[in-house]
Length: 149
Image 1 (spheres, one colour):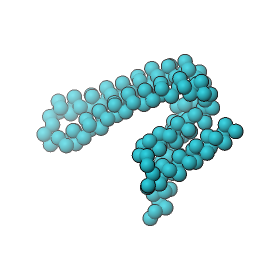
Image 2 (image 1 turned 30 degrees about the vertical axis):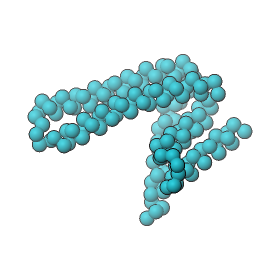
Image 3 (image 1 turned 180 degrees about the horizontal axis):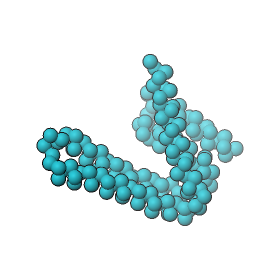
Image 4 (image 1 turned 45 degrees about the horizontal axis):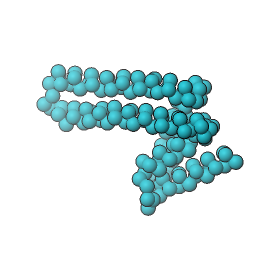
């Protein structure tokens, strides 16, 4: 019964993610799909979900900040490529690397926190599940985009 409920959530969310007249923004719909997918694949209990999702969302937000900073830095380098000195490029690239290191450290930190809630077996499985979700999402988007031509 639980699997059927998750399947219904996933199907209804996936249908609305790609509809043009949905009320929610695409990012919110994708987030709902991701929540349903991860919850289903990890077979999270209600108690685990209540503790897991706040941690996971906190980690995701912190990672988003680092990625935004990297996008801005990369855009600045591109925009100013004619006027940047070698030292400017060095500082910018070092900032990119520092943010990547910070992102990895965040993942490592939250992996431990999440494992404290759902155990190391499920926490390790989460790493694979996140990649699977991204692959499925990209595949779905490509299929839908290809279907419109």
